[in-house]
Amino acid sequence: MFPLTPPTPTTPANVLKIDVHQHLWTQPLLDALAQRSELPFVRTENGLTVLYLEGERPCVIDTDAETPGGRAALIQRDGLDRALVCLSSPLGIEALPRAQALALIDAYYDGALALGQPFGVWGAVGLDRPDSADVELALDRGCVGVSLPAGALAGVDSISRLRPLLAALDRAQAPLLVHPGPGGFRNPWRTGEVSLRDPLWWPALTHYVAQMQAAWLTFVTIGRAEHPGLRVVFSMLAGLAPLHAERLRARGGPDSTAGDPLTFYDMSSYGPAALDTMERLVGPGQLLYGSDRPVVDPAEVVDATRLDWDHIADGCLRAFGTG
Image 1 (cartoon, helix red, strand yellow):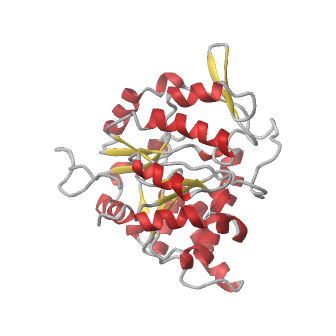
Image 2 (image 1 turned 120 degrees about the vertical axis):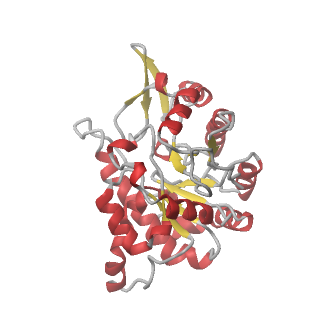
């Protein structure tokens, strides 16, 4: 369970400011990716660290900006107390054959769990032959919960394969983070060939959104009934899927899908217009602060000093089962 440490002297009493969604490229994970000959992998080219993965254009990782000390300083500069890092699911690591996935996840743990304060860590699991023991291992190692790629939750068949993992989280009263990314065996949400003519932001505005919406629809219509006590955090406001609740109802789906007190939404990549609309629909206590740093500079999207931290902190306490 996530240790909610006391607020710093600069933080108002009883208000703990947590970024629930960051990524950090640690050296163990980079080294493991550099040893691979199949996607995903990294290569050093002209002094740059370049990431290659399925369905997206190659991109450069700014390793100089990824030092734990530098990132910890950013947390303090943002006025936060903690930041939770997770494996970047668009890499497709969780969907690899089990041995490959677990080797890279171990490398992720080696780097992320060594960060220490002010960081916390989301666990990761392989999707090839899902095993509840992977969830238990992640929690035993000190992870706050487990993240899963949205593609793995998108559809009845997909979520059925994840029942052991979701049940293990439910039993442990640990939260699930749903992050954009491809699922596993015969999953329809793989991205396929990438066009070099597409802009770098194209996947984030197309299949990321579709994956998150499909995962939300699957969970609210099927998953919630099977796991009534599971706390779930959807990144990027679930691709604004709750805004489709009226259309879902009109097409024969369930009613009252947007008012679930155990379903939360991190606001990564969205600004005031989307936040205001979502707040009216799901309630202010269901919105959590997530930045998606270093993919996004949160200051360019939303001014964290103007957020309602009383509601956000209360939502975070409930999301992690301590409030």
